[in-house]
Length: 290
Length: 170
Image 1: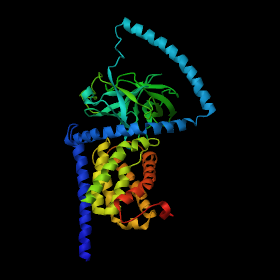
Image 2 (image 1 turned 60 degrees about the vertical axis):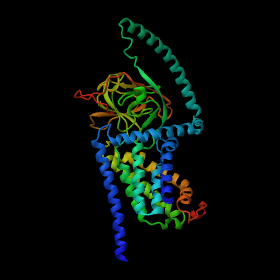
Image 3 (image 1 turned 45 degrees about the vertical axis):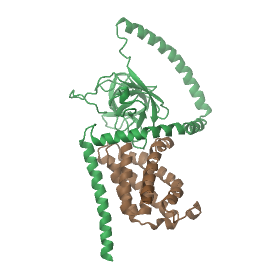
Image 4 (image 1 turned 30 degrees about the horizontal axis):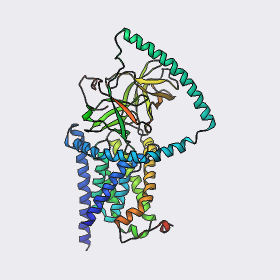
């Protein structure tokens, strides 16, 4: 009886070892195969199945989410309301001033025949899926290879840079947000032109790294893409400085950013299709996201 | 055969919930992990051999809908399914407290192990920050959802044990 039980236990451990070995083999194969390998194609096929499900989930949950947003907005205090009204007045004045500057800018650009300098060509897409798990800051949009979308293309939200295309199916693409832990954008603090790298984190925060401890950075400073590396075009709004700190003897400042776009409210995006292909420092062309 | 179809049905339901529901009930970017709940409950009802196989398939599905490498979640949920399955199939007979406790520990264990896997595979992030901002909130949210789903799952998977209400919990 004891021998029989022992055999059963051995068989159970055998099953465990088999599946653990299978998982390790899968991880190894995944890291060794190219983007067009069979495992990557299985993922694209799974995403193709998942996309309409996610779309239905989004559509179904919209009224409920709207209700909860409305409830949370009820918590705005009278003080916050007054502050927002002041900000609104100030922003309206700034919009008028900026519009004047923009028109002047357009005229000047016409003079030097460079009107297309910022005129990115793009394909607009609708967000049909939010991140499916806690670890990935990835959105699904409704345009794919049928619309000539390719891996590596930058994606803009209504208020600035949102991320980069990392996976493409026939009718969908997945966009890794700048707030994802695997994202990194060569950046520039607009005021002072100090360079740095904007990185996401596991918590979905945005930080600007490698900015010299000597640099003057203040709350509210605007951070834009620097164009270095050739992946993201220069001058795309990434966010605003939220908090600046520096540890004793540190070479760099710790800068937390407020992302330009709120991922929970993004509905439409613009995928830039005419930017240069991603190149690394060696000058070789890559189709992988960074 | 009927058992096979119920397992496939529950895995499909898990996929639908993780893709179509979890993103839209996230709180502060934290979504529940429906696959952990499914693996734990099925391992409890079917034992460790089935638990490890179901864990592997559920983990594969979770890996496939993510953006990282294929395999980490398959490994984590295989081990979870095996360990929970070893605890025996009699947990359902003890009412609510024991299975929900096992589910809570398994959820924490899975999230923690997956975090370790993510770090082993090369993520550059503060480990403690990941624990506090992702692992514990996800585990707590998953436990909360599991308490809500438990009567349904127990009814589907273990017809011989009737758990009709929370009265047995107290």
